[in-house]
Image 1 (spheres, one colour):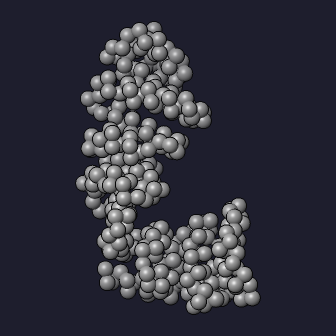
Image 2: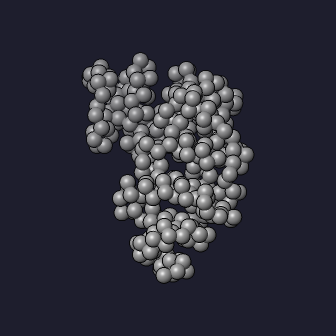
Image 3: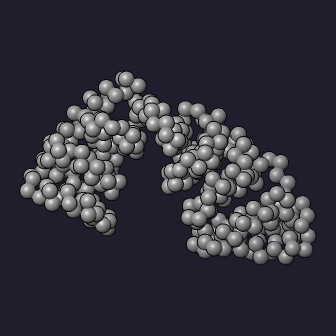
Length: 311
């Protein structure tokens, strides 16, 4: 069997056969074409193993690809793009894999312009490979929001900002870095600009965590809740809102807490001691109606409009 036969098997989708055939060929001769064939069949095999949920095998193949790639000619950088997509796949399946470490070692500036180009699928925009990598980086940052981690992520974000300076996610990541670095005012400025143009629930929620003014926090949480369709993602915000409303309007606090507890039970989440204590304090209170609470949400829009005017 020759290398061209390997590529024919790959073209036919016969990945297992191609992999079995290329292994001894590559072991015997690590030439130009056998190396290229080994790489691309390895990429296919890694993806197949992930589809089969054979995660450890897939990860071992990825590690082999990491060793193999530097020995392969990749003038058009398609191999590099494949490695970036492979790293995204690994990140999604292996909690111990650090995208920050991977892309720092690889070098974010090595990505080609095509890696930063937004794609299309069924008429909908698809994030570029570069932006997907940056997204994974900031999942790590949010999971471990320390100055050290933020400093490691900063140069990665700087490169992303060169390609998409006004991208909403990049601006949000910038605000996250500012917050971690203790520059809360700068983070707030960015969020205020973002909420004037975008309606994602998490933007309002994250901004509410940065502010001290209770009325503004209440307004932002109301907007975050009304902008989020799934109740399981609303429940924690409802609990926070209930706490803020407790001293102002117990009937509204009761409504929010009841919704929170119901959603948590449906999702199989535990009811925390804090939630139980608040529920006990509101046990005799009759909640407002859903219509009344939605009207209250709409009233809070004026507070948000005033906030964004000042930004």
